Amino acid sequence: MDKSWMQSDRRSKAYKFGVEAFLNFAVENLLTTTHIRCPCVKCVNLKLFGVGIIRDHVYFNGIDQSYKNWTFHGEPWEATTNGSRNVEEDDGHSRYSFVSEEIDMDDNDFGDFGSDPYEFANVIGDGDQPVYPGCRKYTKLSALVKLYNLKAKHGMSDVCFTELLILQGDLLPEGNTIPTSMYEAKKTLCPLGLSYEKMHACPNDCILYRKEYEDSTNCPTCGISRWKEGKDSILKEGVPAKVVWYFPPIPRFKRMFQSHETAKSLTWHAARKSIDGQMSHPADSPSWKLLDDKWPEFGNEPRNLRLALSSDGFNPHSSLSSRYSCWPVILVTYNLPPWLCMKRKFMMLTLLISGPKQPGNDIDVYLEPLIDDLKSLWVVLLNNV
View 1 (cartoon, rainbow, N blue to C red):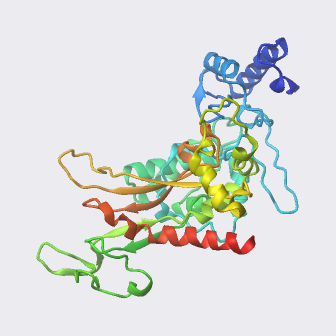
View 2: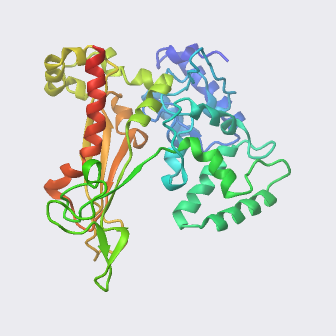
View 3: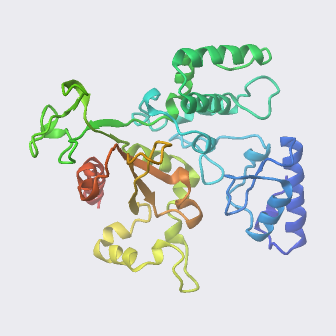
């Protein structure tokens, strides 16, 4: 199909005819007019709309010109693999973005992906394989992700989930690819997961029990026990009084650069030019320019990541009378274009600090593992200059 219209002026007849041909192509292949991914530059195939809204978006916002292979609209997907096994992606975000949209996965059930940065390519076969012969709506991977979402949302046990998989396989036509056990499901979903570290912390926010304090049983600052105290005032040895979960960002940075289009978007800030003199991106700010002037060896490489930290407390319980406060620490990548950098899939959860009270000024104690990792990246950068 001719796609040259994507570069045409939006007021031209070529663009108009191209949009209509694209919409007809999508409807014929997806067999729906109400749930189609919008390929405009703002939605970038992350949102589902009807044909009329998509037509308006493509005219007003323009179509994403990097979306050259219409995989989300019925065109067969073709992986381009070179000597380094670089996996091509079509629209500036992972082909499996439905994972981050549909599910908040429980990392307890996932393995460590960071040991092999190319392992994620192995799920491509499951992503292309229909859940049963002739199915056009779900693949094996997307169906399994949705089922796992139900498990995590409703707290199903592994036994219950296994029985659900068996029943689902019996209900679907012959030749379906639904796994028959939790073990098989884990093997399929394992490459999608990222490792995390569970660390014990002092209830008074004095220290993390790591490095020189890893084997300590009492806080060296305030002297309080590391272990939780039961209702009978007896310490439950082995049960930590406070826990923090750390999600290392380095393996996720590797994933970002593994995607051809996402890696290209990470240098967007260097290729753009501000023509109106207004600050439309952090790259236009004085702080960005000050960083370039202070460390020119860092600023000269557009692939170097500019990161921002954000944190706020929330009550994980439905009861408004509870004062329990849990604090996530989010890492944002400012290299990306404005329409991508604040998308949920690019906002990395790096720390989850348990309650019951806010850490306040002592939050720096919990940031130690994150700062250590970021420092290691900085040292590697300086050594390579």
